[in-house]
Length: 330
Ligand SMILES: Cc1cc2nc3c(=O)[nH]c(=O)nc-3n(C[C@H](O)[C@H](O)[C@H](O)COP(=O)(O)OP(=O)(O)OC[C@H]3O[C@@H](n4cnc5c(N)ncnc54)[C@H](O)[C@@H]3O)c2cc1C
Image (tube, rainbow, N blue to C red; front, side, top):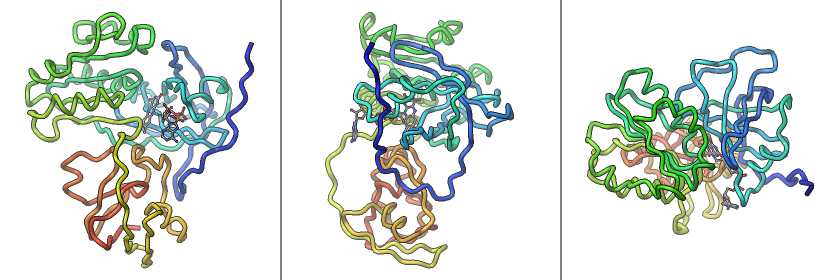
């Protein structure tokens, strides 16, 4: 049998100022589908974990030094444990590889969160769209929709039926659940589906970039704010030109010049200011900061169009400024 070595050198992580950590223990590992393992985390003393709502994720602080985000896919009504499900990335830099190859029941671990940038809002009718491991934040939303008596349907696509996690849990709702296993029934007909979606239907989508791009294209006719999505990794985009920016930290009474080649997050951390970050890619939301003055240049994959226009918060790890000066609540 081939031996696996623990992925060693941790990549540099962003500063972690003031982010509370919760010690947990791995209670159970479960093979959910080809390449997907679920992990049940509980407090070592058996106590309750912090409350959460559908759409929330936690950060796993892996013993190798890597920090990775995973959506909570258990039940918010059961705080005796958090369930996450991790897909093994073939080109892993170490996060999912560690979970699959080295995590064991009984192992102590630390987590941060829950944090939620994919909030599930009350509606009379929902369309859920999930691709691959993107089913994880959608699953608790489905359960809440069932509990609230709302009308809902889920379209769930994957490369093959064998790779699609939680099909058994969805089986009781087979009238509302439409599975698209790529090797059997092809891709989700997103354009047609969104084309006949009523404007009052709230659409929640999570999955790989091509699926989310197709959702964006197909939902052009729906009112702004109808579609909410979460990306597990940043969109591919052109390299943007950076310029220097002056950042006034209102609470700390300090001003920091951010050079073009440094992120705002790193420059503020270098100056010893109390900022927190994790993914450095504009997807996890840890570095969300209130903007008091100035216009941010949003480069994250979290804010909706409406939220961007409002301009009252930004993600310091990737976003910059459209004005020479920003005043932040730091
Ligand atoms: C809010 C949120 C929730 C998430 N929820 C889940 C979940 O429920 N389940 C789940 O499995 N995952 C989830 N993820 C993704 C997860 O956090 C990890 O990104 C994932 O497990 C891959 O980590 P890794 O270290 O194995 O792979 P990484 O090394 O991070 O690689 C991921 C992919 O990026 C590519 N890549 C490699 N190197 C680089 C590089 N230098 N720069 C950019 N890309 C690179 C690789 O080709 C690979 O395909 C979530 C992410 C976010 C932000």
